[in-house]
Amino acid sequence: MSELPNSQRVEILSESDLGRTISRLASQILESVSDVEKLLLIGIPTRGVHLSNVLAKELEKKTSQQIDHGILDPTFHRDDLVRIGTRMVQQTNLPTSVEGREVVLVDDVIFTGRTVRAALEALQEWGRAEKTMLLVMVDRGHREVPIQPDFCGRKVPTRRIESIELRLKNVDSEEGVFLINNQ
Image (tube, rainbow, N blue to C red; front, top):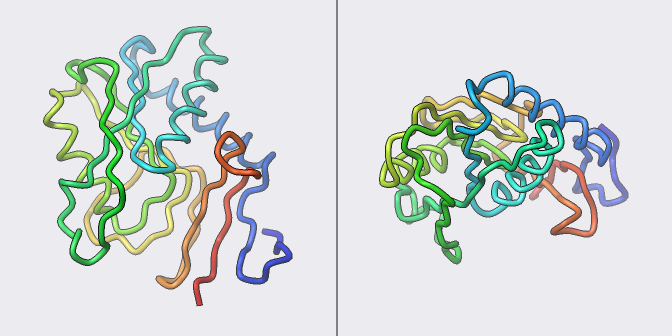
C-alpha cells in the first residue's frame, strides 16, 4: 500500500494491480462456469455496474465470445433504507432471462452484506438461475448477514469509519482502489 498525497486516502490497488486482479477474477469465473454461453454478469449499482462492464470485456478477450451482462438495482429490496437513506434508483436492465443461467452478481465492495442480500431477493423476480455466484473487488468485513463472495479481488480489514473506493478510468480520471479515512 502506498500513501497518496491526500493523507485521508491510501492506495490499496494501483492501476496495474487492478488490471492484474481483474484478469485473475475473470480467469476464476471461467474456471467456475460449466459453459461460458450460460454466463450472465449482473452489476449492482453503482460501481458494480461499471466493474461488470470491465469484467465482461476481459472475459470477451479471454474467450472470444460476447458475454451477457446487465444491471440489477436492489434498492427497493433493502431492509435498511431508513438507516442508509436512498439514492437515485438505477433501472434494472437484464439482457435475457436468468432462467437456467450461471449468474455472477458483481459489486465493488462487500461490507455488511445487506446490499447483496437485497440483490439476491430482487434477482428471484427475474427467474431461477441455475447457479448464482458473487464477485466483489474488495471484502472489507463487518458482515451483518451470512454472505461471502465466491470471487474476491482483495480482503481489506477496515474500521467502520473508513470506506473503500473503486475508481475506473472509463468513469473517473484515475484507476485503482483506495481506502478513505472519513474522520
